[in-house]
Length: 99
Image 1 (spheres, rainbow, N blue to C red):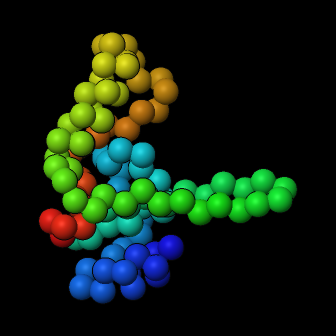
Image 2: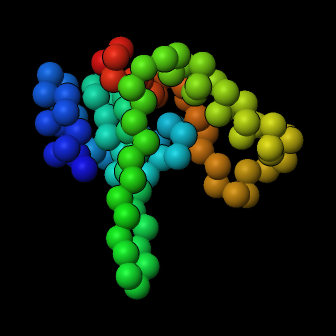
């Protein structure tokens, strides 16, 4: 999937590693200059394998990041984060158009 994204956006240098303070952080995050542009996930069953990608192409990524941060904070309702929700920093993400 990283190769497909790199071929799709050849002017970007895409790296893959976890962007800790993004929403839905994971080992298969794709980033440009240390900011997350995409996340990849895999699902397996006895008869299928699916690879999916979230890709932020355009729009107000800072607003989306703030919205997700607020969602997690509202869900926690000032309680301890025993669920392991990420501490979202909206500035840790970017979209392809801005990259």
